[in-house]
Length: 280
Image (cartoon, rainbow, N blue to C red; front, side, top):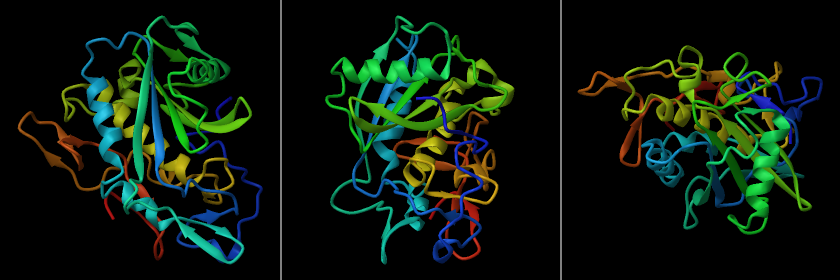
């Protein structure tokens, strides 16, 4: 499962023609499916030596609380078309929008510390085949979260900090994402220190993980929403944060999700002329 997209929006087909009736707000719809069935299930694969790292409970709390946040609600402005039927991404209701489902650890570096794109796919496949997550989940997103001693050979730290893609596992189409530790390259992927939760690497990963999450929901197979340059919704707002606030440690934040303050990149609101926003 090689990466089809990253923070520069490399996945979508720039030569594709959008659905004219749905091309508004500075971003276009290309007719494909979105993840519009609640809940979208989040699975974490902790790759490397994560024992005792405060990033584990921090990013777990992010996944558990993201679905009810005003930041995640931004993607309720996106829809898919099936004939004349327009279905918006649901971010509310009796069924939660997101559900943190489970996690597993690969502390033995099963694919080494220098990961090719294919190696990331093997990590995901092995985690699913181990039974840690049950059957392959077509409505899930599998995140591979790496420690600072792990790099990725296709451009981590120089071309991207994270990416998302899709592939087949045991005949089921799944979505997955690579999220590298910002501590591997702080100037590129962890630009804020001190960070709001006192863990620079994990705080940076919260931002890039959130970025890939909303892109996966609105463009899971690179036939959903992106602009004429190939930029997906979060790409259009990459590394912009809007209004920020300071806590007593001197760290800055721009959103509160669950019990935690975070510094998370803005996302593109698909309303009116469109704009980068932090809440909706």
